[in-house]
Length: 230
Ligand SMILES: O=C(O)c1cc(=O)[nH]c(=O)n1[C@@H]1O[C@H](COP(=O)(O)O)[C@@H](O)[C@H]1O
Image 1: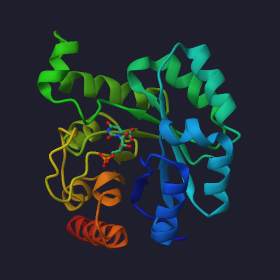
Image 2: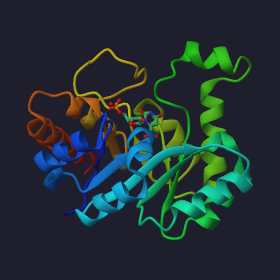
Image 3: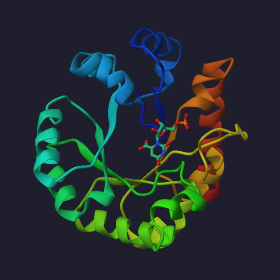
């Protein structure tokens, strides 16, 4: 399978549903993201199956703990042939460094500020720090810890790219307004034109009537975004 900028979030309730989705579309989707729901059901065997089917696997369990605990988790996961694995940048530089040290060939990606948080929800739990300051601090901490990339909202790309040269992995992508839990979103074309290296897309594909067509439309929009860059 050729390289791609589209990462599909396999956020389906069961493994048979995920495999049936990939039977339909998998030839278009080299990069797949597995979240805690399917990982807790299928464990290592499910990840290995995806690798055998030719996918690069991004395990998104967003580790966030003290450095020693994160190091043990990453050591256990690093032998599963993963392409990438997430940690929360708010865990601090020593925790991110511990993850990188144990990761082998797996990329450690740092989540900056969740795309579901709007300014109101942010200030509820961070009353004295603007979201933008946290984004800058977290992106530069991730750079110091030598992470493999940063996960951020398309609306935060400018801020994150000014604070770090790490690759950007961008969820919160909405081809048309869906009205769900994502707060800070953009279309695939807008996100790529703003410099996203990879897009993460789940429900706009998984909930589409024709899922193969939804993937093809997003891939076309990515090409349009790339042409804006050149
Ligand atoms: O780490 C992530 O991938 C992630 C970070 C973030 O800030 N926001 C976010 O939506 N994600 C993930 O990206 C995917 C987005 O899915 P949809 O909202 O269905 O397109 C989900 O699997 C989320 O867990």
